[in-house]
Image 1: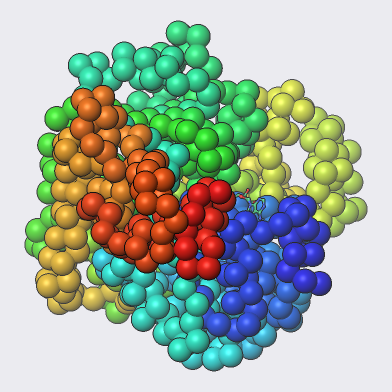
Image 2: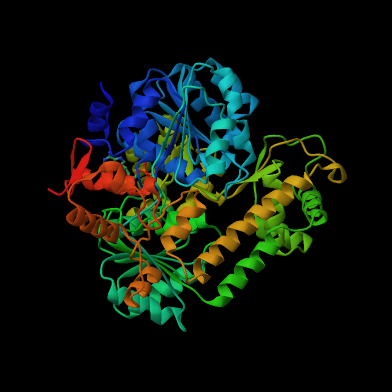
Length: 634
Ligand code: ADP
């Protein structure tokens, strides 16, 4: 099958989007490839389609468990064999999945980076027929990036085990330093392919407002800009509060954050995507992998801590190419809050050491042990026990993570699981003796045939509803049956995992690279200051300011941000593509046909290269005609 046929067969899409086809082609030609596409731009297809086109298994390295699980689920729904391995899974599950990738038909195997490097995985990866190594969220490999994760630095080690397999790295945000780092650290071959478009979004109007009351302003915006909206806020509590206040005013809205039950999250997300819900009020947990083209406004209730995060979140607006608004509601306190948070997020080295020491005693972990072990980790219990402040403790853990000593995952929700341990005959006997449990057992048998062979996932909520039983009673029944040796029962859990990436050392000898620590701190500070400058600087085009941060050298103003609009209203000159077109046309009218070089030369403040790009665009659009070397009007 050709890539297009694969896209059609498994996804039902008739064509690749701009960029995708070139990227897929490069990967299939065996070239190491870096693809920079906007969020929602369809990055996953770029490695999933080649995975199906190639013989063997594709390894996908991905940092976020929730995202990984989501992708695996979607692939399976399309009939593609996919699996995931991450910290916190039981060893026999990991074993089984790795074996399937060696001996079975697994097409895509997702791995969190720290799992990729365990001895358990390495040995098996060596035996696999690896077609391709895909690195999702590839910016995590760079210390210049906003989400540096040390285990990413070791992904290249897998290349030594599978020297034939090409690498594809994908990300939505990268400054020039990060783009370079990705290629260097992943040891890209000479024949590499880098796909990068401009980050510019000509239909997205960036706006900053400094209202007395954010709540009132939010309502005004929602009244003024009809259509679907995302409101980003910084805390779970606020999502609820604001969604409620919108509902009270007759605007259909729901909250969304990482703490919701997975089914509830799906439900709200679906309703919003289908347009049954107008506004979703969310933390930054919302939006990954979502493709809703007609979002008309993305409103921030305050600035996030990096331009990368802002650009990704705001960029969810207007993917259909129609005008959309990225609106920031700003209060000068917000800047101070960001600076305060920043200070707290880089504690003193002594404090980090203290946390490391406490961790050892909390987890009863001896010096010299613990490598690759994952613990359920309850931060609240931890800080209570040692009298730490939550933020400081979290910041210290983060610092230990950035130094490569440990890893704290996002909370992973694992549904309850059940397996019948008794034989079918014993179970039948048991049903006869416990008539009250008969209906329960029957419904499990009906829905989960495999439950005699291996543990199966339970949807306890749905099951309780179906049996018309309170959830607690259902769970009590399961515990009873487990204690009587009829079933194995593993209750739901939702705990972040703490993984030691190195054996535990004596805290006094813990190596912390102070230079690196300071470098990362300075970068974080730079991002925050850039973000604050973005909102506080009312002089230049907002879009230009953002693009410059991403290493672009644009010369034209967007013409639609609040700053450009204010200038236009005041009669000041704003250099927009539209204006350049009008000016160029006027010149053609005055001087008749012109040599392409002459038309592209010396156009005010716009450099020749930029003018050339615009003229080229105008020619492509048929607004100008290129006749030999002369440009004329149609
Ligand atoms: P991201 O770049 O954020 O990882 P995804 O890969 O999750 O984006 O894709 C976003 C959405 O766009 C998904 O729903 C995906 O199925 C859809 N999509 C990707 N490629 C195409 C295509 N060629 N045609 C139509 N829809 C596509």
